[in-house]
Length: 94
Image 1 (cartoon, rainbow, N blue to C red):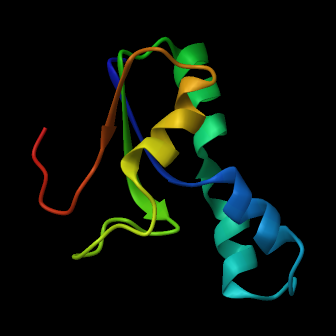
Image 2 (tube, one colour; image 1 turned 60 degrees about the horizontal axis):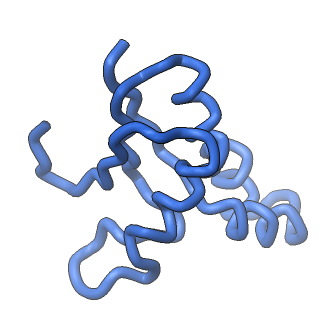
């Protein structure tokens, strides 16, 4: 496998959601999305060459200024993975 694509969220957002209402949408998202650190770990274990992060939470895919810079997401992946990391955007072709 050369590429892995993940919907994900930053670990800080997951921790905040974990502290809240157990029936909230934020809680559901926290339970069904990988953190960037988890993505890096899975990518390293799978020995892929490239990670594509998509469906970023908190969001930076929407038009206008990003809520968090791309480097925020990449830093989590880098804790375990040293290959190429791409921030997926709507309409992007790889």
